[in-house]
Length: 240
Image (cartoon, rainbow, N blue to C red; front, side):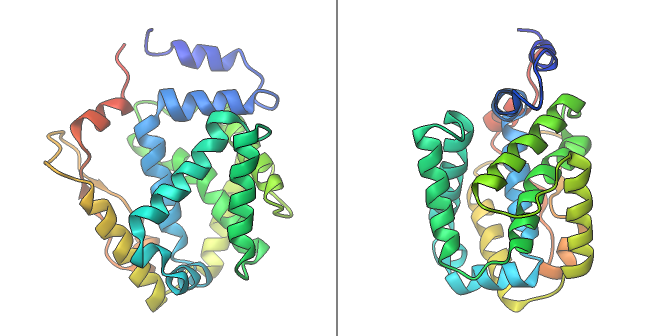
């Protein structure tokens, strides 16, 4: 398969009707390493909203059981992507996600914002570091996928287009980003978890500043020079 064959396949699909198929191709074949890193940073970014960072600190899931919390989140979200929102495994994963969220007093605004980070952060990551940028079809499909997931989660007033998700995210961060001591503890635990994954230095030439300056001001120093295992890094740039 040549470098752009899957993109050509995507462009033959309808992003509103075939959003799951398009998102699955994008996330698991075109950019498996990049999307994973971007979604990790999307969640990390939410700590800079004090109501979110403080709640995560109070639950102690990310400070006391960081790897388990990471694995549980990945398994639940991956089940929906792999099997579909209306499949038995997908519905079971969404029920589990909704059940966990109902245990806490989380506002619709915070839930909507977190969903926006899943749409916007991967696009911005790929603009900066990806082997290509997302196509219009992929952006529309991503917005449709997370809009549908958000509806299954009972989130109200969901953005419709990618541009709507981006405007919602930027406005929410401008209004709500701020310092919180609990959020800093969650940030430190998350950075320690990420650092524990690295074994030998990645011999590539780039070292990335993983967290944007706005997040850094709220949660502390950013990750500079985050290195991945070389076999994982190779997944981000398919051969021609």
